[in-house]
Image 1: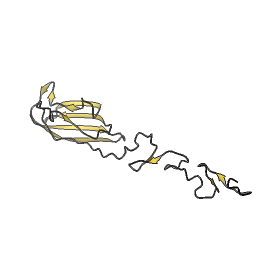
Image 2 (image 1 turned 30 degrees about the vertical axis):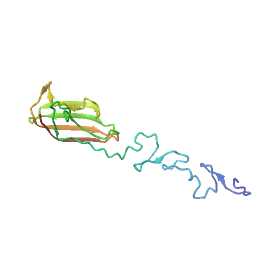
Image 3 (image 1 turned 120 degrees about the horizontal axis):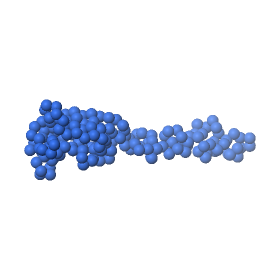
Image 4 (image 1 turned 45 degrees about the vertical axis):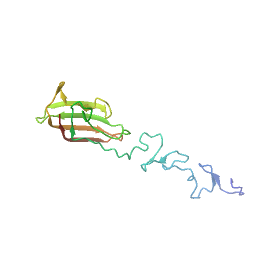
Length: 161
């Protein structure tokens, strides 16, 4: 056999080791976390067993909850002039729907199917190119995270001039 034992039963396993087939290490020395001999899957920083080429490798544990402000001031001073949603730049979040409504339920602003970091993914406090009155407006935002999870957020934002 491969150990040099006459009439022995040791053989070269899938990992290239010379072992007896009943040895607990047979075909185990080179097994990746998925159980594949000579595989390349590893435990990522999130504790998931994935191939390093997997798009969600090290992405499943990002703590990137959305931050939605409750006030903005579209007064042209370049500070908080737009109402927008924030998240980690590492997250590729799709905004499925983003709508702003006045207190009577009229739609003031609406976009669909954009990325969160797109420049059009913000409201400048206008309706039909005219500045809207200061006050409380309602928003509804539906997003899809990289993981495929869809979230919906409804709340209010104060517009102050």
